[in-house]
Image 1 (spheres, helix red, strand yellow):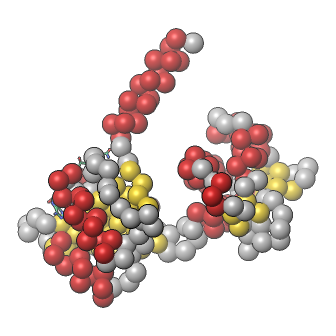
Image 2 (image 1 turned 135 degrees about the vertical axis):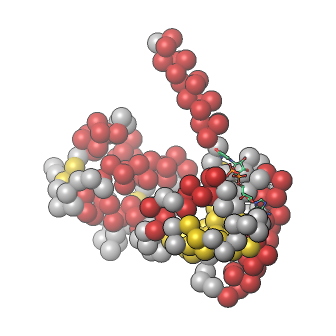
Image 3 (image 1 turned 30 degrees about the vertical axis):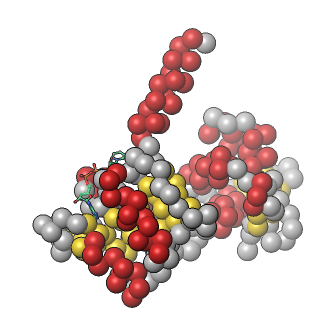
Length: 220
Ligand SMILES: NC(=O)c1ccc[n+]([C@@H]2O[C@H](COP(=O)([O-])OP(=O)(O)OC[C@H]3O[C@@H](n4cnc5c(N)ncnc54)[C@H](O)[C@@H]3O)[C@@H](O)[C@H]2O)c1
């Protein structure tokens, strides 16, 4: 229905990050309402120009932008458009490797029972965890991964919540079996081929960033 990237090469990761925030901003609004870039900017602590610039990277299937002159963006259209850009309007099958503290917490997250991000498998090496269920999903032994990937549904994203020392080997095995996207929590840079994407989550790094900005704000 809506939204094509005009030129993927030009889209920076920052724009994609802001798109996910736009979705969060829109999801509490009435779908039939319109919202201006100024109102969105105020709600999100951004500038209206930034929002307009981000959204101008994309066009609708009708060859138009998202906004309606004098009215702003219709919530429903902008929301579904951004979902389409991000690919979250379709089901993404996820596996989690490492059912420890972090993996267990992610599994308990209700977002992962939604259709758009659907956890279809969880793997761990600890025998005493294998066979247990978390959030209705049975933990399988890591040795079953390759069989699982060859026989079950397509896996779109693998989340790595394993110790640093085993993460690369696991990623390599998964890549050989066709997994192309990783959300990596292990504190190392995964070596992956060009056609594989990795998003690293580093909470400690975020705290350091925050600390920098906290100090800056105190100086202003
Ligand atoms: N990115 C961040 O901000 C952040 C924050 C906390 C932890 N971490 C990292 O996330 C990872 C998990 O942390 P945690 O606190 O959940 O650890 P944890 O020890 O509680 O869990 C790790 C799990 O991985 C399993 N495991 C070990 N080897 C495995 C293998 N070969 N195959 C499958 N499973 C295996 C263990 O049995 C355990 O259940 C660690 O690498 C940690 O450094 C990152």
